[in-house]
Length: 471
Image (cartoon, rainbow, N blue to C red):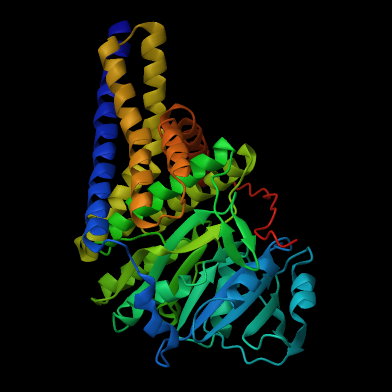
């Protein structure tokens, strides 16, 4: 029995080393792809290239949809920042999804809303709408009040009322940089309509100072938990999404900031209700449509534009967020499991879907097993110290080393943190990733898998402070 147990222990050790070596190499390959793209293009999206788009009468108008549920703290500031966007023609549609706080009254007071008769197209089925409001101050601002149906339902309601061919979805607690919409729409204009979705970068707003709806000062916050989220976002966007986007394999456009061609989204049925990860599920369904209908359409990630959003600053709220994210990933993988290794769906079915399943979804299980093997090997002397060190080294490369590379890409592309001290602080914290932050995430991701398997959900509530410093 002891020999059998030792054999199983050694087999699992080899399995974990092979798996984590593969995932570490895959991240390094994605980094090299992203690095090559950045090096080739130099500074992306220079401002002077946007001037013609900003003044052209042929610039495609955009509907900005803001789903809001209990966003009384930040929704007024979010709308205020959107009203100052540098874009020739756009409308803002705020969808109050049955809030039980002062979201609607805050908007009414700030923007002098009044009830209007509004023709609502029923492209997509949604919960009943109680009223449509317009602003006496800003004619391009519309607010919808409806019964609660969730974020997907709120977005679908916004799509039904939207007047323009493209829509931008942005969270009610987020803020776009003033030229973000121009930068997001620039590749769409150059593609003759073949780019049907664009995702921008999400940055952590904790620590920034805003005045008159403009970002005045960017600082790195002092809370380690928030700092690690900043680094994590670098890694997810600048390495993962930039790498996959090169080959039209981008599966995630953040729900906090994405631009889509409206008729294509309606064609695939809009946002799916009843799912936690409605943003990823929509993108996967669009990829499915592209392959099934043999279209030349693309979905791309553009590093700059940037959307700033408030991040959880407590362990409990962050835990609930990551459980939801992992459950949403599992739901999407399950709903579209027929795409796995299916040549009908090209590289998305043969490469990207299996990668997300093995690395992004099951990665937490293998990482957790790796931590157990390290601890067990040291405590019970099951493994040679050299093997334990090998597992540890691969774990560090998988986590901390890749995170430090993400900080490097941030400096090459975005330059959002202007001080040298910012980069040093971020780099040093990135080296600690594998020693405390990543193990915590592993546990929460496993909880997310369990929540998916048991169909249990726990949403919680984030204590928002808002993004504005004008108060």
